[in-house]
Length: 586
Ligand SMILES: [Zn+2]
Image 1 (cartoon, rainbow, N blue to C red):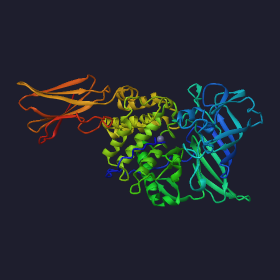
Image 2 (cartoon, rainbow, N blue to C red; image 1 turned 180 degrees about the vertical axis):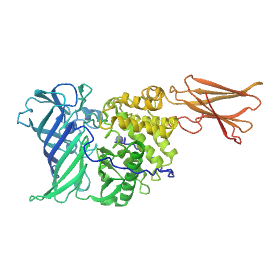
Image 3 (cartoon, helix red, strand yellow; image 1 turned 90 degrees about the vertical axis):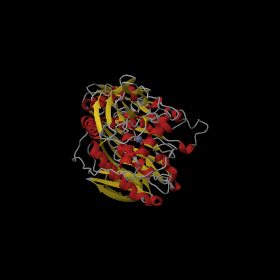
Image 4 (cartoon, helix red, strand yellow; image 1 turned 120 degrees about the horizontal axis):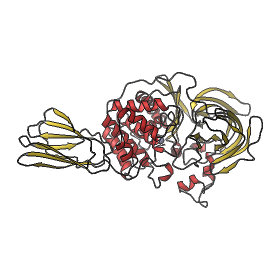
């Protein structure tokens, strides 16, 4: 989800340089390990804002350990009162002020093994989690089947999931059913749901029958697979999804639909009639972004991507990602859809991070939101539908600037008072800087290599670093100094000095981040020389013969360092006519 901000920068001249590669789908068939799979029959009652459901979860122990218990996530319990971890971090309401229609909840009525053995009596609830002791341990690679009956109460949407729209008839149904927690690296991931975090799940298959009133259209994740009309005035739609970590759907009696193909992928848009003028832009951005990311990182591995447009009074449901389904919004400007482009491109970026490289968003949100923010902001800088590169950089820097002293790699719950934005913006600008330093082709090759190694797995930050360093060499400046540190990237040309014997340029590293930089010097003759400084020391002096003195010096002349906020001191001297640049490596 893009962090909600009130700053909307003016949307400037579009840039050129759009890539023309096509997105080809990966071959059909199961690609991911089948760890947690779900078969569900669910029924939405729009009047009571509830969903009742039955599910069979098939869980296979993916670890070498024997499991004596399992854990279920019950996300909607986050909204049951003002005292949950989620609500306390959100900080908007007390018990006295929480409006009743903003309350959500989920209750499990039956939990049993497939042979009928009850598990609910011995299960215990804490916050958004249920601990379930097993009557017999689950061995490595062994599977169990759980039968669950539950009821979910949806809140009026204020964070990702719930209802709104015309007569409260729009429903965004996310994080809404009893779901397996993840056992990874020798432990259950049992952090309660935090307000900043979204999810971390295992891969599996989904097969759902969703029953809604007759007039409702359902925008489901995965692929639609038939519809049946029922005698009680409802209809049941089937959806299936493979190689995914979750399932969400939206429904409304007002949805209109459009579809385009991008490479081998169907892009389905569900939009509201009041936003029909934006339909072309939604589809254009989605098709372009999907193909651009496929060219950078590797193919989108599903046959279909669904885009959900949200009502103007339910924008809290907009700008969210689920596997094969994203929500977006038209934005506030009547004259430009560039906000739509930014949000939509970001959410589609999530179809790579974390939907393919499935990282733990609560523990290491930078691997999820940071990589995605980089991906989306690069789309808006590349696409004619977006912003100029300088506008995109300025926008991202405006998000980063107020929290530039914070690391980007903390767990999500350690960021308070809006500081979570630094996970997005600092990481995005750091990766964009690395792209500049390493070169776009080498950088994207390294990113694609990371995804190839960890697609449908659970990598962590160390895995990401190792994958990038394998291709690009030591990146201590990025991972230690910048992302995990509190320092900034800041260079300056401090002095140009002429003596009887030498012309000397002094460049200083004012920030703690030791990223290598280019230094461009221009001589009185008009000749130019470019050097690269490793910036391990805090300053460097470049000496030249006084016979052709330096008249100008500039650090980072090609603006590779997108994370450098203060560029005012990056040059000294006067412009001069120029000759071709001689490149020297320090
Ligand atoms: Zn996001």
